[in-house]
Length: 119
Image 1 (cartoon, rainbow, N blue to C red):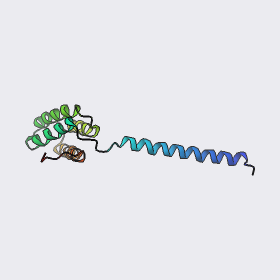
Image 2: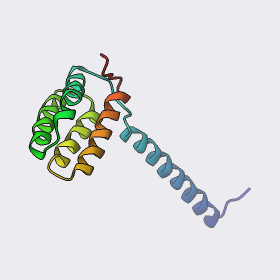
Image 3: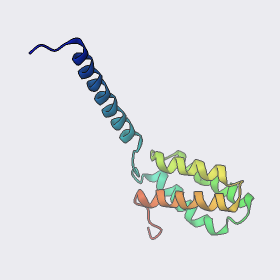
Image 4: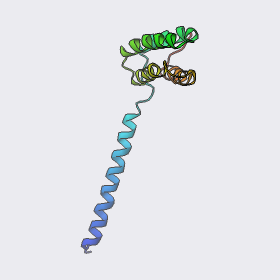
């Protein structure tokens, strides 16, 4: 069976498209690292946040808490918790709505990693 040049180009084009799609799928799954593990830095960040959240009603208090949590999260190898701590720092000086949304996301990242307020 003889394959002409046009058919060969189609086959090569389809093969290239498949390789690109597989590469994108692998790259995307590598970026979504999941919850990560709860190492000492992550546990300290989560615990500090839980202990101080109720008292962080003003922008000054939120900034102070976000700074403490960020420092503790920096000692963690958990990228998701570190990212959520950075977001807390950004929203600490914003509206209460933004702060609460990032607080909820940070708390969820802690729980997803295995942290519990009951120890």
